[in-house]
Length: 335
Image (cartoon, rainbow, N blue to C red):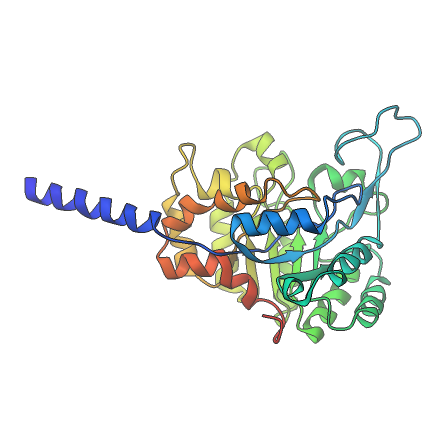
């Protein structure tokens, strides 16, 4: 009995040391070059943050809305939720991303994988705008998103109709994405702040079912920090996500922002075994992201925060999740 206990302790120690010895290289699958005021620290700061964090590749997009500084507000807000003024769809965000990339040397430019986001997802003309942008910068854009549909208080603050992932305007975009072999990064909350059930599940499931040739990256697996402020943790998320992964091979999951805690890690920072098992079961379907917004000082902290979870995975799976899966979902010839 003592010998068995010692053997287990030695094995556990060896596994711990092996995990500590892993040298992860990352792809950031979710990064915004500008913030909600379309401002940025700039490319030098971003590249330095990537180098410091071991991020070899990054998705890069703008922010599809701009927060208004309302005439009646004496102080400029610092975030979209800073006051009650609305936000509005802002197509110029993509031109900022394109201009920043065009100034880079070719070797640095290859590290970035730009996604188009500057369109109104409730406008059926949006697909025509995307086509014009693709023609304006041929060969530049590698994906579409982050598309803001259901998005906490931002949904209510954004001017116009409520965007849904399953509306007709987005349906046209999904067809285009399939034709152009481009993945779509969707922010679509699975529920509201107070409903303890998958209230909006149909809004993400219908596109998955109706567009099997379109690759969907579900931002934050439908979760959000705002939802967690009201109901801490959604007990239904894991079984729902498991079923969706079984039913829809075109679904990929971005684990950024609100997924690490409380889902991947428990209150003590220990990986939850049920999530480890899910990622092991679908090793090609998960990817990591920082979800930084125009400021890049926390990029390393966000990406390295996943290390305890990665260390709990087999090393080959961990490397896929950390780096390779995002690259694999990009258009052929862009990986």
